[in-house]
Image (cartoon, rainbow, N blue to C red; front, side, top):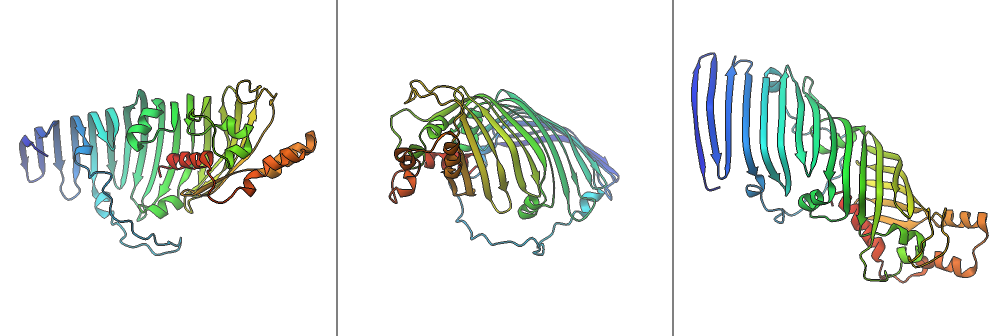
Length: 378
């Protein structure tokens, strides 16, 4: 912080105060504003704020400097709440405000043309609308925050379209694992103001669609074609693995912190993928089944064999921090029983990972873990 300046006209009486023609300057940022407050026993506040641009990263602590992690205490759903927030003062507040921001940078991500309108009285506050531009796309949202009772309730709806995912993830998370143009809808409701309670009471549904993109760091076609190589042996070749797709669609529901998707699909030139399963946000565990299916001959992909219709299911389970990936060998054997029993060499290859020595390189499995951790922001 190198420069701060403030000027405004103030007028008022015992019942009302107004701040007019306000100008606040902080380094390279300039804010123009007006504020009025009346009826001080039950404050009625109106404001209009315009900020040209601000880089919040200048004022936030460096992301690399983190405090030593505290040991996480296990919390019980029946555990008594500590330090409960008193919302009595908010129930007296009447609010009507508008905020406009030209450009905003926070945690590396860049937002443009942000506009929000907030209003509220008697403990019910509404945000409608909230709009912004984000990486060549648009986001619109609305929500409500209800503190009329002791436990606050929140509901949020979001619609987004045309967002370029790769530069967003690079700027926000320093991750490079997904490309494409995203659109999304999200409607959620929750209760409480503490992390564990929020996760336990989270309900809603959403739908994410990524078009003309790629998952980087993992080659699903290669994993399906060669199960042993995908899950136990070192990757061959110097080309970085990736899975291109024309569409990746993920509809889901959330019930008390349990995320459920019954038909997440991916369409690519060589394979179709169906994924279904659940993720428990409270316990931070997951259980998914991914079913890839070849739709064409893989010429020039290490084989000229006709692979249309072949599936090699992949099971994903474990915790968010340490997911486990493995082929569904039982399903593979059932498929083989329908088309003919596998010969000894095929069976040996399918089970090869079971006999691999401890410490042997597992590059694609590790990349799959890294990809999932990236999606979870870990």
